[in-house]
Image (cartoon, rainbow, N blue to C red; front, side, top):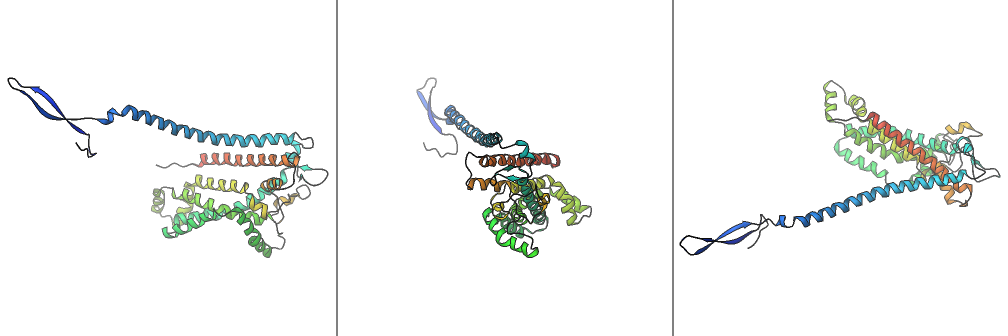
Length: 347
């Protein structure tokens, strides 16, 4: 018998029956045999084994992520503790000092605030570039741009996110800095403004893409209700859609700021390698025309220079990295609070 696969296999079985007063006769009868029930225990065992392996793989991946994070934290803070155990290092000076000079001179200074001030300068300048431009671009793509224009512009903006950061650094040196020097002659070859603008351009796709996704997730019923009471398209975009998507927009802002804080190559190439002289010139903290050194740029300088692996200069890089880790952690926690505060749920 040939089984076509469209139903249970039927096997002819001959049953004997005895008729009264006559010979034994046989009649063919078809009985359906459920082969799935016959193989069920083995299939269930195989399925349980497969599900167990999948769960084990997922747990292993989660433990790998947690273990990696824990290892990074352990290395950072163990080496930071080793840095503060050095006799010439003072923890009070590290957190309150206004002079950072770990390499030159007979007397070293380990006040971390010049590096923090340089990092904050780059962060603020990049935020002033990426946040307004990114939000306006996202509003245009979400509310004004035709579908064909959106299909072209959004991929073009996302291509910027794939450009290597070293390219942005050379772009800042070759294009942005000469343009700034034509506007104002006080800009040096290395300055915070040029590096901040380049970092802002790098963060622009992050703000635009995430903000545009948040704006498009707002229900259309809110837009139609606003149009129904006579609101213009601009009013709907600014007063209805943007406040409704505020949690996603703020998350995009905080992600771009965290990205700017941790940027390395652009600031190492375009911002310079001299910490701000806050001890002698306190106003240098707000002067974007001067050369600055960020926390990430100092770490690069240590590991690419001639610092000994057992000296205070080497261990100071871990202390600076721990401070950078705490700054990004604070930004992450702040972002979580903001998302929880402004989250909107729609049915």
